[in-house]
Amino acid sequence: MDYYSRKIQCIHCRQRLSPQAREAKIKCPGCALDIEISKPENERSSRENSNTCPKNIISKFWKPTDPNPKTPLNIVPSPFQLPHSSRPNKRAVLCGVTYNKRKYRLKGTINDVKNIRDMLIKKFGFLQNGIIVLTEEETQEHIPTKKNIEKALRWLVENCKKGDSLVFYFSGHGLRQPDFNGDETDGFDETICPLDFIKEGMIVDNDINSIIVQPLVKGVTLHAIVDACHSGTILDLKYKYNRDKKEWKDNSPPSSGVNKATSGGLAICISACADDQVASDTTAFTGNTMNGAMTYILTESVRKHPGLTYGDLIDLIHEAFEEVNQNECLVNTHFLRKFYKESLSQKPQLTSSEQFDVYKTHFKL
Image (cartoon, rainbow, N blue to C red; front, side):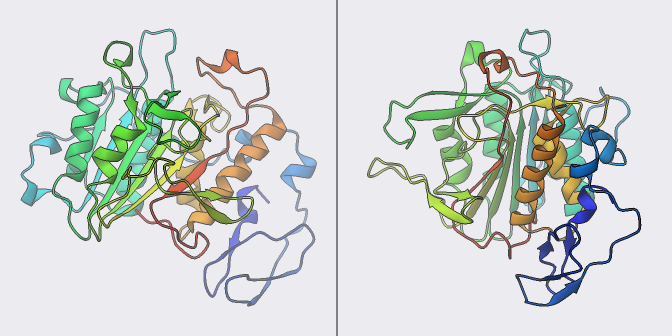
């Protein structure tokens, strides 16, 4: 039995179940129904009996759907040019920065964008005219410069209304800098790095919050998925989920009078690692194609397990990282990796503007 197929769902309430080895029956924590566990003959536990890299365990996962890496992903005319009345209620901005021809180049970010775009269209019903892609392989107005990224983020939330589902995805470098405003509990601002960040500067979490979080009106939901280093609280949302304690922690700014809340809407962020950790590009899951580790596991989990809850998704991502770390085949190409002497360990984070039951709320974009 492969690694992911151990993750089954209750036939009654669709709660994700994780039976232990040799367990014949398990009680669903959601509805208390007893579920029989059928075990095929010759079952082997990948954790106990396999020393191979997880890429062998999940080799049947999809590969990037576009065989030509230089095929533009934006439609013509650009969604930027659509009138407000023609914009679909599901909209997304997908940004992948390779920093091409630079010493801190990343190789998996465009593959990440393609996988996320494919997931949005095939699994969640997004239309191409509602998706703006920013990569170095696109036309000039879609190059991921600081100006273009901020323009796209404003387009994403502009005139948002009840029923809108918005997605911001970023794959690239993330950094942190000292917090001079006194509104960060850890004393640092988290940032994302546009293509021209050396010249134009980084995009700080405070600015991301003011551009795409605070304008959200009641009935609008924003999901941010950020595959970058130091991205744990990149949207500065009020609550951070503690997976170990299964509870939400208040992440409110320590300074009084600082408003980082929405205007009634809901913002949820899944990020690749904690604020003090680094994220990674890896070939561990495909053998030859570079991908952001968190992005790849997230898209594959959604594809293989319809009806996942947020808790299920976060658990699957964490468990996949644990499996990779045990096999010691995660390849990190991040340019800051040389400054970290300890073994790589990234723990994806879930933050939100509101508290909710992560094991009863289904992940839906």
